[in-house]
Image (tube, rainbow, N blue to C red):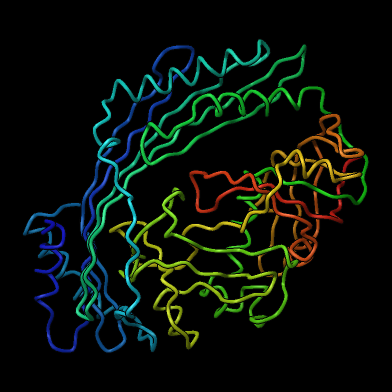
Length: 446
């Protein structure tokens, strides 16, 4: 039996009559390596462990945590959580999750191979990435090359019958570049993710970082007009992150979502099917259980353009009068669960980005955006963000452009989706990337 489960079991066994008690126990660590010009600039390895305890009584919740797992620390946390109940405001929806019968999907989320990688080998991966990137193009300078990995193990036990334990790890490399041409400098980036280092594609990460920077050399400000945009996979992933906030059950019950009363309605084009699937082990944020201890599950949020469901934790589900979708999120033992998407992905099409571009008469390939979170209002749906990319004319990529904005509304953009590409990219974030074609977007330049 896991040591973490044993600790959690002991806490829950001390529950008093009338109490709901939850013990969340975790330990984990991460390594970050950064190199510059063949020298190690930064190496950090950090580990942490701790326990968070929730006690709920008469609708009031008390919570406390400690970054230690000694018997004394655990006893102090339980006592503090009980004391904090007295300071909590009554909440009619307060309560812990209860088993819902959904089985845990078996996944391979832990790699012994990654766990055994030596520190020198991690540094060597970053060094290799820097060399490969610098060799791609004489105009390219490597700003920094990075390797990172993380692992975690957690157990959650409750008086309501939840008892789960799991562990996972993963790694990625990233590189940022600068391309020089006379007095002009442009930036780029590349990355690759994997469950272990053997899955990392250093050559692709290097190539993409060089291409993203050099493609924008000589960029000009485009003329303002309405046109078709093709989102690069990384940009699409950022866009999906914004969409996810509108499908968050907590936002919905608080009236902060543009889709609050639109379940069962067409909210996107028929080509748009959006799934939250933490049971797909290819996703960097795949998981077997959610922050409440319920089984993570595949949820179809938008099917053929029709809004099917919002994502819920057990708490937001009670407020909404529905059932949890297994979407409680917990950042660690220091906090209580929130709600959100685990691992978003669009159902991919079949065509490559080049084939998508070939079908666009007048448009722009958006390679990067800036200020996307501050430029989008998830309540009204207004969308406006700075962007850079390549013009498209007659199905051919043209000159680079920058210092312009693209604008529409989230509602309109979803309905104006023309096609989803087949070029899925797994990224170190809560959404996978894929090229996305959207018509009738306003480009504001000169």
